[in-house]
Image (cartoon, rainbow, N blue to C red):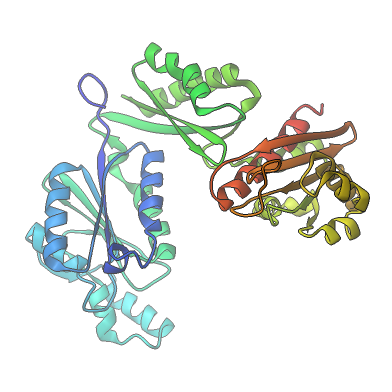
Length: 421
């Protein structure tokens, strides 16, 4: 956003490590950093990956700090010879390396905790560019730091995710760039299910046209369409007010399709509604292999409402555990609306739950036929008011079909609970 609009701080993320460049590990850090910064209102414009080479790292850092307001590096702060991030930053910025504040206390603490580390190794990890602000690392030995040089802020974090994430959060908490050039940028994510991305875009188009301070984009993941609303205005209060009004308008426009904001997934909303309605749930899964149960049990406190989850993968399990009639499987096939219904009703009775869920399908890539192709999934949700059954056709890889199926089942439960007044 430029010109007459409030300027957003731009960001470049530099992931450091030859193992990332060579494809030996997946760069989950860049994903987390980009997501966190975007949610805080920054505009991530570049992501760079560079190996453990001083010359290449120096080049990447020089380019980044000349084209972004904030440069976040991850990796290269360890004790080995290949960990040269601090040396590269100090060299590019023309300052020396000095021990961080409370260095002696730091060495004493970690030399006691980690007997295997020598004092020499720890001494390298406490060095930061002169004038830098230290970002404490409560989970490891490498100190992070932020350093302003020219027009850019450089933030250096370790590559270990368990260390990097809390340190990034610490930096963002105290970061002055959240209020940039007299303005405030904020982002809010609104999650929907049951309406296509094109349908969502058609409905939200006029919101951006009506108010130029609002920028919207959509993202699709496993059937969930997320609307990202981004505003850049002069004050935080104004940004919050504008986002609140936008969210209210979108909810009125999209109705029950909206299920959550920011980090709230479908399972979070199902858990909230189970608690609100004082209802219990049980799940019988075949092709999803326990994925619905996994998602639900990620929610703290769900044990009060989630009674039982069964992976009835074989026909024998469907018959013996869920009491699906063998003749029904012979007549209709294991992947059929009739069997999904019997599974939902069977697990509901078995667990004495208010709601029962049954899922059966063909996740592929093998096992499909012309009559029942890969991606055919039958989902049933049983309750006091009867059993709803859906026959779905999903595309994508095996894991995609599993997630599509699980999310569809959770959404069916959500709507049943939402309408159960």
